[in-house]
Image (cartoon, rainbow, N blue to C red; front, side, top):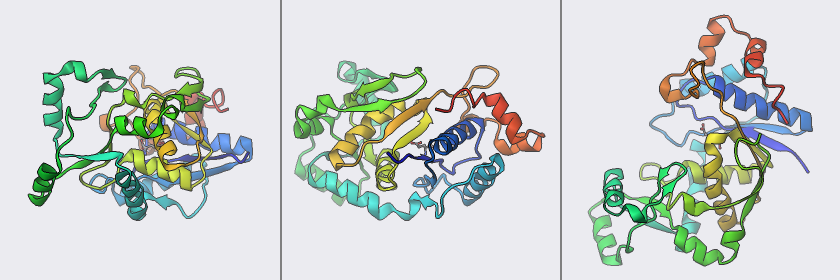
Length: 293
Ligand code: GLU
């Protein structure tokens, strides 16, 4: 089988050591398998993404010694494709408009905690007790109220029948997450937003679509995205997309044991470079060779 993998950063900040680990793991795995490595820019969040961060991604990855296929797919150039996917979900009644704000959802959950089980990423939203009637929906739309599209797990279950409980994906990770054939449990995430109020798509929808159209066979990424894979696998089934294999790798941590994250202003690759680190010294720090499959 062809081996095609990818690194898919969002240009919302400078890359840090955690990104370098992910990118190098994917790139080296592709080389060892005689496969292909694709770089994709995930810039649907038009308010947070900035061109200088995108330029820095190219510069930092080249400095690390990576090369990738051109042209690079930029998600912001493909909103029409994501709209078409959402439309297909709308046409089949698999998504519904949710007018609630985050605050209102939190209040709903506080009122009826028994209806909102704890999921792997905190409390999950399982949808309203009762779907909004067409009149109220039309009124709210006429008032110009904002809404997000949520995937109804309950309707997906109805559509897929027995198949819903038999969905699996293959995980080749390092054992820090479930390993082998993993049974999919999208209900653990609840009714997730697949079309955001602002951009009409979401990370989940865009990433799963792009992995399908780019023919990705092995998704290599941090284990922080392991739970999201349950939803991605469901979307693949709903859209009849091919199912790649997965490697969810360990997350690098700083000297205090905290994982690197852009929002915490983790030390960036460019700062490390300016401080005299070389790609080789970074690779040694990451203990990369012991990891690549
Ligand atoms: N764009 C996502 C991020 O920067 C990663 C997507 C993925 O690897 O699935 O966190």
